[in-house]
Length: 155
Image (cartoon, rainbow, N blue to C red; front, top):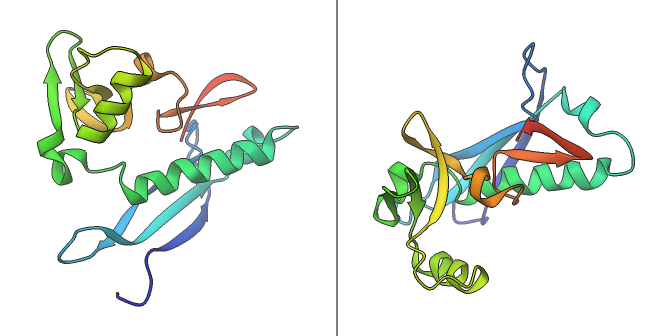
């Protein structure tokens, strides 16, 4: 485990019928002391072929892989690994991220000193693994991607 920083394996998988998922990812092994990811897997699904065509194909594929690497590095298991930075915002009825660096930058970016947290995806009342797209649109770590027109393809 000490010989490398992060090993990521990428797999090609056949899509399930009716699925719009382009890819999924997450850590596989974490360092026993720091809990940082040491290895992770990305699965790229075959329905991406029809989504990744045309002039923006390379950009969309690269954006999707960056998004998936984000899941391996930090954007997953919020409720298990980062409980101290998550609160329910009763005003908007969403879980929000309150980590100090992200919160400081979000307050400056949105020019909103009273911001209490950055909205996270909330699925059936639980914290999801993305930013909330209702508030953050097609930001890199929201659950949908923009492919030409917004298709709502999940990443």
